[in-house]
Length: 204
Ligand SMILES: Cc1cc2nc3c(=O)[nH]c(=O)nc-3n(C[C@H](O)[C@H](O)[C@H](O)COP(=O)(O)O)c2cc1C
Image (tube, rainbow, N blue to C red):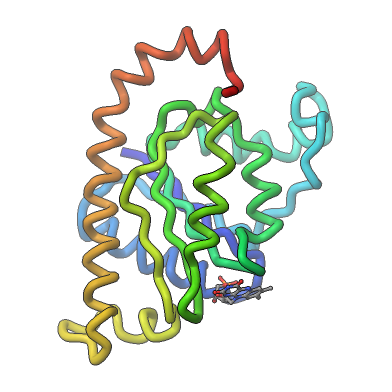
């Protein structure tokens, strides 16, 4: 299976980027398949507008290489830092580019990141938007990595000093396991619904 990980921070050496690397390691250990990392630290896209819908438009041209990679993936992991009680603007812009023609009826696991006690707003932001015109299927079991600095320093330990680290690591492992199941079992669903999706590419 081909899985795309989108790291949603455009900061240098972001915790989202570091956590994405951890998720990749866990996914490799679980034989999830081929992993494709899109780190928004290195992605420069114009602010999305109608030119995304014109074949030779400025936005369509800029996004074309990413669109092809997104099309190839069968499942997605969005690593979403909570910024100002929401997802970062760079990720909001990236999400605007995504469409049902390349993502429809594929599963998405959301992993929120916070250096503190928060992180729920990043989840709420993703869950309340994005799916309408992409027709993605969010898995029920998102993960919130709170106190991410502690997690990043202790996650490899057999028995981490902070017991929450082991709990969150296991939550991540379970979420990856279920993402793979969703991806596999949604394949026939996608095949069945492709004509419908072509007729109604936008949700209500
Ligand atoms: C611009 C900005 C806004 C932030 N706002 C929040 C917030 O609303 N809630 C929160 O829990 N953490 C907030 N943080 C801290 C992030 O949780 C922290 O930076 C974390 O490492 C994830 O961001 P990163 O992937 O860019 O490192 C903010 C950080 C930045 C840089």
